[in-house]
Structure formats: C-alpha cells, structure tokens
Image (cartoon, rainbow, N blue to C red; front, side):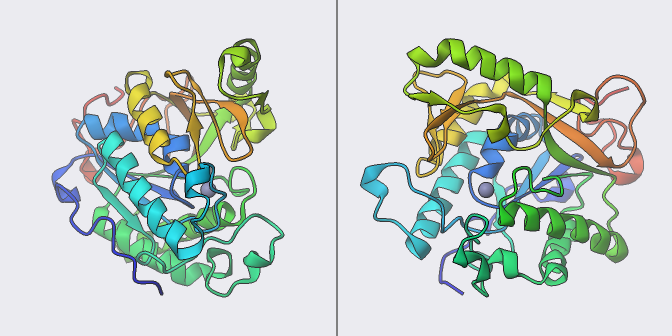
Length: 312
Ligand SMILES: [Zn+2]
C-alpha cells in the first residue's frame, strides 16, 4: 500500500438523490476521458449521478512531456491522480474513486513485460476479491447503467482485460447482494465511423502537431457497425472532453487549437470522438434503431423514471 490520499472522499450529492445513476469502470486515469468523456459530461450536465471507478493509478504509463519525464512509479501515480481530479472537474464529475483505495492495485504494464508478474499489480489480483470491492460500490451507488470494456479489454492491455473481468463479476456479486444493474454496456466504435474519421485525419494531418497518423487498429473496441446498439451524441460537450483529455498531460497530447485529434505517447494521431458508442450486453432495448440514451427503457422500479432525455 502507498500513502496516497483518496481523490474523492467527499462526493457531491449522495447518489440516492439523483434519479439516474451511471457507473463507469476503467483501468487507468485517462481511459475514462478518452472513451467516455463526452458521455460523462453530458449525463453530469443533465443531473445524473456519474461515478467513476478507476482500478489503478497508471504508474507504468509512458510520460510524454520531457519536463515530467522524471516521474515514475508511485510519484507518477500521485501525479496522475491530480490529472484525474482535473479531468473530472472539466467533465463536472465529483464522484471518482480508486478501486479498493488509491494504491490497492498497481498498473500491470503492457502485455508481456515482467511487470505483469508483480504480485501487487492488477493483473495478479484475485478477480473475486477485486470484484467484491467493486460490488460494494455498486450496492452503495445503485447504478442503473454500468459501462466497461469488452472481454479483450478493448485493445488487450492486461489491466483493461482485468477491469472487464472484475466489472462483469461485480455485476453478478452485486445482484446477489441486493442491486441488480439493469443495463451493462461495453465501449465500442463502429468500424465505418473509425474508417471515416481516419480518412479525414489523413486530409487534416498536415495542419496538426503530429507527424504521423495511427490506424483503425489503434482504436480500442472497433467492431462491425451492427454490433453497436447505442450512440451518445456528446457534441455539445466536445470542449469538456478535450479539456479532460488535456488534463491527462502525461499521457495525451490534444491538437491545439481545438481539433478533433489527439495522440498518446506513440505520437500517432487519432480521432477524438465526441459521439461515443456502446454495445448493450445486459438488459433489453427496443428492437430497431440504435438507442440514443444509456438509460432508455430503465423503469420506475430502479428509480430512474422521468429522467431527462429518456426514450419513449
Ligand atoms: Zn488504460
């Protein structure tokens, strides 16, 4: 255990006062802003209670700015917790937590590194024990919607795969302990959307502060369009998402002035999506077109009736 302070020991309104409650489970600080920043900003602005659980502090992330290159290990973790707090201010989210408390699980590093064998790393965590910690949060917050990664972790990072396993197991444990989450989603990007965005990026690249473009395979969660059940238009919250991503300065470079592109430490430009996409994997939806609201169809028995923007 490290002695890092808890980033959010005093969340704002108790979850029970908000009719609609959204819980997101992520591996490292920055994943939430990249994958769900527009969604989080939109629901927070609409008065939903948004809770983020991050499983590690990302102590093994590669640092981009040379002036911060000296940060590593616990010092990087502490710095990234500050970045996370700043990102959450940008998104209007005040309930964000580290799974089991800050420092309980450390970053496992990229696949195949010796770091994966560190007994304290998240990859080595007992799934049931970690899921038990998350189930406690679920029973406390009583979310109608949980968002996490697919079973490949979106792109194969061990901590993302483990976050998926822990989140899905926690859904089962919480159902046994009194809160059965009506809807669970995985983060997705429709292949046609990703391909179109990279085509635009190729045209725009000469005006961007990046030398090279990435490719569709660099985007986590890309799937055939017909697997995507839900799209959340966060266009109105594009600036908040960009600000949140910019707050994670050790990990992300966002094109300035605002352009819908960013790069990670590999310096390959990628599209910054402000409509975010999901696959419903637990719960039901009306057949036909994609949902435009994660809470669509969530009924009175779970306390979300009458929420703004709910589908008929
Ligand atoms: Zn990550």
